[in-house]
Image (cartoon, rainbow, N blue to C red; front, side, top):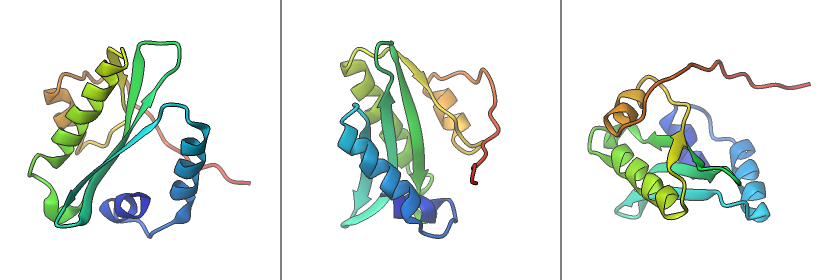
Length: 123
C-alpha cells in the first residue's frame, strides 16, 4: 500500500511509511487501511484514524494512481472510510489534503477551515 501511494505521489518507493504503518497496526489503536484494486493491482489507498475519546476521525493518505484517476475511486474510498467512521460513532472528520483532493472532499461535505505546512524533521 505505501509503495503504491509513493508511486501515486511521484515519490521513490520508501520503507519509511510502510514501517510506520506496520508499527501503528501493531498498536491496534483503531487505524484502518483501505485499498482499491482492479485486476489484482492496487490502484488506490487511504487510511482512517479514529481519535480516541472524541467524535473525530481522520481521513488520511488518500491516493490513486494516475491512470485510474477521474473514475470515482478516491471518492469511493473516502465514502467507505466515512461510513466506517460513522459505524464507530465518529460524526466529525478531519483531513489534510492536496488541492487535487480538496474539491472531492468538499463535494462530500467537508469544509476547508485552515491550511497546514508539512515538514519532515530529521536530526
